[in-house]
Amino acid sequence: MCAAVAGLGLGAVVASVIASESRALLAAPGGLLSAGGRLTGFTGTYLMLIMVLLVARLPWLEQSVGQDRLIRWHRQVAGWAVGLIFAHVVLITVGYAEAAKSTIISEAWLLLRSYPDMLAAVVGFGLLMLAAITSYRAIRQRLRYETWWAAHLYLYLGLALAFAHQIATGIMFIGHPLTRALWIAVWLGTAGLVLAYRVGLPAWRSLRHGLRIVEVRREAPGAVSVICRGRGLDRLAVSGGQFFLWRFLTRDLWWQAHPFSLSALPQPPYLRFTVKGLGDASKTVPHLRPGTRIAFEGPYGVFTDHARLSDGVLLIAAGVGITPLRALLEDLPADADVVVILRASRVADVVHRAEIAALVEGRRGQLHELIGSRHKVRLTARAIRHLVPDIAGRDVYICGPAGFEAEVRTAAGKLGVPDDQVHVETFGF
Image (cartoon, rainbow, N blue to C red; front, side):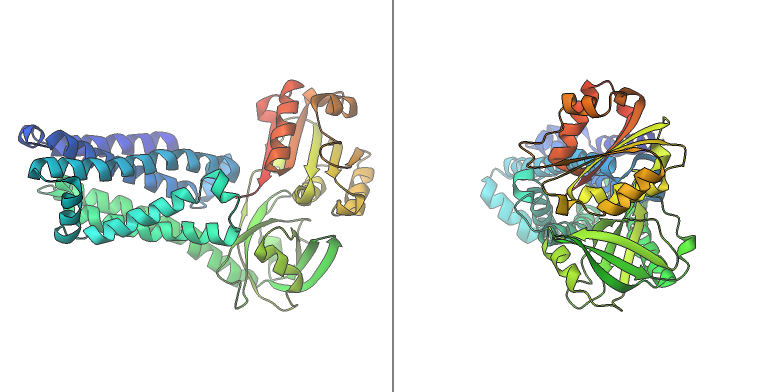
């Protein structure tokens, strides 16, 4: 349904741009290039709005497809959006230069100096390119999470500047007040949804539940659990395997939101999540003091029992991916046939090891611990079949680093597990 509405919106944008063109405009020098620039500009901007909505934390989207898939779609749409807007800049500049019989550089300078809101458009374009460049995997992997997050936050400013530029210079709006009003409504609707679900709802929930840190407890080398106390946690609808975006309200950390999964179901008035020191912010968590206030967004994710299609379950996790698996294991029904596989370099790295063992034993399930270097202890299809001969009839939940998730998912496919019975939660950004 949402895809159909988005497709209809795209068609309406393309139709309105084409309808605003005239034979005289197209026949003029540079007319076709300029028309192509207008078309790519408006379609690229529309895709930018779709891209923003995909990560706007809309509850009906999150609950139906999950954040992993939404982020994947976000990245796919982003490639098209950035490409089209880049094409818009090039085509408009070349088309106007051809019409004026001037050089491209001269025309670009004239546009910047003479056209309304053009400076704002250039700044917005620069912010868009910054977000695009920092999204490339090779670059993203070398950035701190905080740097990447801040670069993407500026994308909203870039969109606002682009809106001002389009409203001021868009030919499709001249003499068409209804088209202008509809375009403004689309922008305002998108902004309203982002503000409501990325700002308003999290702020209201944070104030309502009033979370404060009670204890920061060491669980394993580099990993700590944060135990919080709050109000009305029994009214917080959360399933095992879900995560929240947490903001620690200290002078240095309040502006950063970080995704951490619950490592246990809430036990009102207490709630627990576990953090491994992988980034700058997560490394500061062990030093947080009791009494520190916490704001949060969520819960998010479909890595839950609700996604299960069979009675048999195989839970496979590595590293900090063990955290949501422990909460999911607690949330599974008593009659579920459970097998758990944990992979770690050392026994000490298995977070919540005793708790998981107790939960598996209470269900009369099976627990396999694969300890050793990832180069020596690999979860190949052959190794998994040996541990779980009936894997093809089970739902498989995989949680861990991206490389681990891809390796296990490939192995599950080779062993005959249907795609809709493979559920993943990838850690990374």
